[in-house]
Length: 313
Image 1 (cartoon, rainbow, N blue to C red):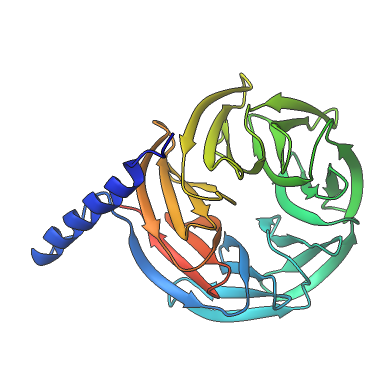
Image 2: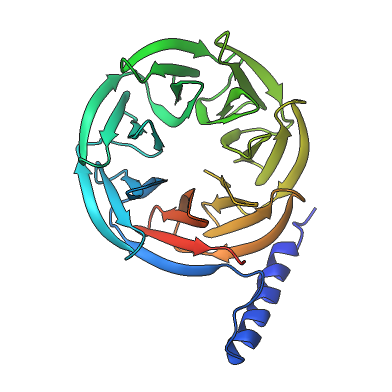
């Protein structure tokens, strides 16, 4: 069966609307604006917004880069964070998992590493929830719970019957959720018992996760779709076909923003209707999305850029 032409039609319609309104001196409705393209160099991967700026993990450069959103320029760097992609901001600190098995704790104000927590394995993603920092450990097929008060590993939680490796992680409905790269389940972790339970999605490779509070959104990296799972009912409520290789998606405002790594586009999905509302063509290999102050910040892994995208009002 051929793929639905809906994304192509949306792009064409958006382009025609934009041209018509531009001629009249207006702004196209339903079309996001590229506010800035910030050259950071290296291989920008993870991104997160903080009160002091937008922080980006440069995987190739073994560093963190701070962007000033007011000027859309690089305003600071922290060296020595090796082979890192994802990161999060919690308790006034940046938490940066590394493929070297170290979870870095970074003071974003002082611009320095304050702790190197030996977790072991290859660390993929991180989330702060239930008073802890949770890290997906790829090779061990487990989630590691870290105590941020002591900077020590508190618990290692295996993912039952996981295939491939643990990948994305998010919090929703009072639980922590983890994805995997090969099987068909996502995993719900109860912070009270530190036990993981598989929840079926029916799709292979529900790898990367995002939260809208009451639901988990997951990207299926093999069949090019995005799913929505009700966190309370633990049931899939929607599946959306997207372009090739959806990766580290994020919920920003009323939309789910999905980087399609191979297709060089970002797909914007209405989180209530689970319908595609826009397909945005980007630079090479869009990797990760983060929201800040209403905008979506997207890293372009092979282009050495970070794009600031503003959704329509």
